[in-house]
Structure formats: structure tokens, C-alpha cells
Image (tube, rainbow, N blue to C red; front, side, top):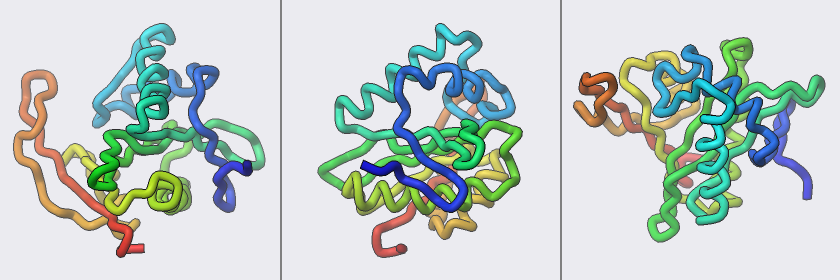
Length: 175
């Protein structure tokens, strides 16, 4: 079976051997500033690797590593979690290593992730939950024609402070 790809990138399902690449991203505070996880050590990152494996095992999602076709470099990761088969919806997530920011990668790869969600996972609704302070992500997701449904006020707590979360959606009919 061929791997999903775009013009410049290949998507490979995340496997345990990807731990160093995942750690590079999820130990970098620039990547995790608005992200729900952060891991200081490679050993701590095993928790995330178990999470990726459990998504597939339990049928609740799937994540892929994003690799440059020419160089083979790992650039980041994206995928789905909280997949609800009954309602045919899931939450999408995406992150890139800082050296790959502002290179149009999200704009190129996200349509392939949407395609995988609709065709491989059988979704009708894809949801994106974005920390309201993350203006870069909100702008990028809106460029991809995600619909801003509203703001969940004081929906989460981080460091003792309440955070607002913006919710976006992309439906099968939006394709």
C-alpha cells in the first residue's frame, strides 16, 4: 500500500521508532506553548507514543509523521483523536518543528489529512479546538476554510488560569 503524499511531503503512520522525532517536537516549548502536552525527557515521551498506539488499537484515531520527500527530514505530525464512530466525527491536531514554520507546510498537508479523515476514517465532521491565544493557528486553519463555530469561554485551566478555546469545523459537504 502506498503512503499518503502531497507534492513535497509523505505521511507515515507514527510508530514506536519515531519517539526521538516526536520528542524533538513535544519537548520544545515553542511547539507546545499552546498544546496540551509537553515532555521534558525521551522517557516521558513514551506516554505520547503509547497514546498514538492506543488510538489505532482502540479505533479512536490515527496520527502521521510529516516527512520531506526529497530529504526524508521529519517536519512534524498531524492526525486524529477522539474519533466517534457513531457520530462520524473526530478532533484534528497538527504541529510542526519550528524550523519548518512559515513554509506553507500546513496549507499543503492539511488537505491530505482532511482527505484521509473523510475517506480512510469515514468521518463527516472534523473538529479543531484551538487555544484562543494561538492567533497563528487560528489564521492558518481559517485559510483552510474551517468554519469558526464559536468560543468556549474558560473551557480549560492552565497554570491556574482559565483559557478560552475556539472551535472550528470542516464537514464532508465543505470539500
